Length: 454
Ligand code: GDP
Ligand code: GDP
Image (cartoon, rainbow, N blue to C red; front, side, top):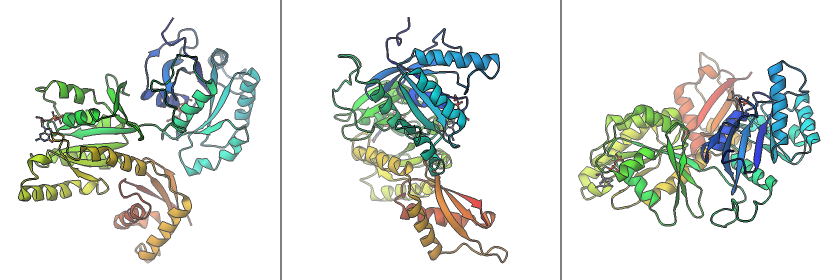
């Protein structure tokens, strides 16, 4: 018997390709405790213990259901039967539907099939990445009150899903799995902000992490990371959102073993970056800004991540006005790729302004995830056009008609135009900057895409 089998069981079910595996990974990645193979259910079923709003559950990722169930080949049929068996054995079934298209007849059939089983059921509409898919939601809401839109790929609604799962299961038995603090969980638990600390060896990353984890009233938890051997550090602060420092194992180890020198690894930095919402780029004010620092800032810009530039060891230059001026100039030049990044001049050694770092991360994260109402967005577009029209192209007037946000993390806007290919880079940049300035997005990159419309 495996260690998770006494936990309440929640199975993810749904047709192939609706995003069950992606959702499973999303739910397990930051708070995974252990994973088992679950023999006997299906070959493909994965299971993991997952924390949901103060309750730990055993989450099963099942093979897949087909509407009707008796169609298809032998393997499909068996998967279908095994999935139904998993549902029978679960305390809660989460039926995942594909929200990138409208509700289908097959979806309705599946809902009926599962409702007839009489097991507690939660309906999740996945792939609701942005406003475009939200347009389909009214169809899904017709299915009942328990419909919850999420985007596994863009991490939308995942905190709410955890809460719904906890609520559907009811309170944990006395003395078991109760939240350690005894405090009620917040009404809408949000996902932690994922932060990567990047910088050259010796810039002061481990000193900085030490300062952060040592701050008063901070609760620090090690959690397994996404890649093998990776360990992330979860920082829980009173009254503020959790912060997950991704892949901090090496950084924290170095903080304990003083003389171990890190080799800068581009691959590791890129992996951590890929997995983060916000990159904190740590620079060494004593050494000055190097080519490697510039390259790191270039990667962050290219990845379209939020960014905070932390110019560390400021204690060593602040007494020297010439040197500090020189460093500031160097920094402006190096950080031109990330004009949206707040800059902090701090000292991990003395602790000066280190408290501002997490505040800056919070602000960047909030903007990075922002969803702008379409009306406001189009007002910004109209004002930008009033200030400056796109230049004529081969005697043609280039017109921009309408814009809508198609993704967050970072905010991504689709702009409809008559000749998208004729809009020069300089005008694209102007428009992006106007959007950032007008929509409260000064501290996040934004992306613009253009599409043709007559
Ligand atoms: P499963 O067969 O139900 O386990 O589905 P997968 O997790 O393998 O996902 C099927 C496809 O849908 C993959 O290409 C995923 O990248 C994609 N996908 C999953 N979640 C989302 C989402 O939230 N938004 C979008 N746009 N695609 C998603
Ligand atoms: P990492 O390789 O980026 O993790 O850098 P470390 O945190 O190991 O720091 C490298 C060296 O710089 C150590 O000797 C630290 O004591 C020193 N250091 C780190 N932060 C500061 C700072 O703010 N001021 C000063 N003067 N030294 C620092």
